[in-house]
Length: 244
Length: 303
Image 1 (cartoon, rainbow over the protein chains, first blue to last red):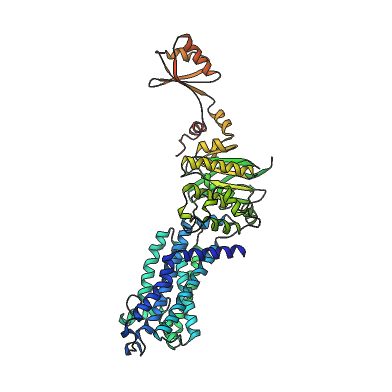
Image 2 (cartoon, rainbow over the protein chains, first blue to last red):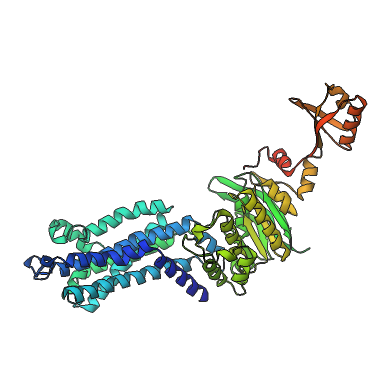
């Protein structure tokens, strides 16, 4: 337990010491929120967004961004680097299993996701009057499942990628796809209907987040899909993961 | 002497590649035991089996009387391992790394004292990335020692270090042994083995081809000595070759190289003096572990 505390502390310190990680995970979604919110037209309710403002409509995409950045890039690249540099292997020679390092890394990533998401929700509320998630339970479930699905995919990438370069190679397309379907690159109302339908069911379930945020019960099908992705990708990652 | 590591007829293959065919050796408590061999000879695989990182396909490994796989939890506390090409996160600081690794053990060494002892005291707050090759290697050794192990396995300890850093690291290994730690050292530097090891096993193509003290190994493989000189006047090869001590006479440009046994130097200089020939640049050369290694494996130890 003392050892795990030390590992967790070290991983947290290493994360905070990496300015680019903090900036991208926490800073970027917030900066985008503030930047878009500064445009008056985007704060006006519009029938395009079911009577909401663009900011309220776009906020779930910022959460998708946080999840994609952490789960699909930061996590797999860090773990693949740890393996590539023999850090996991070195730990395997000590009384502590390298699984502890993996767990600590996951907790740090989770913490950074929560901090980033809370900041987006709170700043959107305080600065731009976006109501807090109207269905808190549904929102929490959707967010949890979306996070679990993306982190599991990230772990799977870390498991199958032999090097950190390969991890980047695998995760970049996944990342771009997730960002695109999540409406980060192009707001979703501008995407063709077909892509919007795909985005609704693909992790991390941007539509479910939007629904729960604005007061509709999220559709259970995407939630079930994310749970299945989380379980399958997580199990495959655990089976395939190598310490060296 | 108590035997602390016993390897018997070890075998290990990766798919079609047989990494270790038949390796046996035993290491006594307090020894520095060297595992030597050309690249790809099976050295690292052998010590990885000792460290419990790999499961042998055949043969036995016993460390401190236990099986490294079945008793891995106990042995991980008693065996410190420094692996080849193991790094740390760039932004991790020296003191942090040692404190973290110390927390893995029940009865760890004091990280502060260890840093002082390994000459890392001034680097306590330095990031891993900023360390020199020698400092990284010393930190790696410190991490292998922080659990106060009874055995330290050091794999390719000085590869990539400059000669100065290499010598410092050797001094360090000797100090570690003086604290009573048994050391299993993998190396392909013959000078390192000659300087540090009490005994060495030379492994080639997955087998032990020789095992002895470094001096014993050289004497066993290449018992001869060489006298090398530049004669002041032409000298007839037969003059030297007829001496009972001489086994061969060769020429390297202006130099004559005489190989032989017994009191070779005296025999050669006497016969030269009788013919009023002065031997300039006279040198007596003993075979080194390097020469013995080439003789045993047919290969030069890779630099």
